[in-house]
Length: 78
Image (cartoon, rainbow, N blue to C red):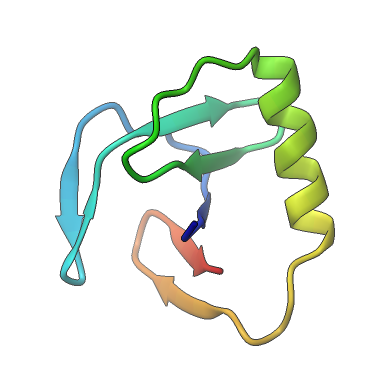
């Protein structure tokens, strides 16, 4: 499953296109300032479990990621 982490302090509420990629569903974790994108998956887990998953994934990030930067966000594509 492709995963995209957005490092930002803004909450994205609506779907949008950027760089040829359609971003559809975001879960906001404002205490971490991270946003996690699950493409075409229904989210039925608690925020606590999502938070644990995100923390684990962030700890495992590699240097080979593709990075996009805009004036409002940095996107890491894993």
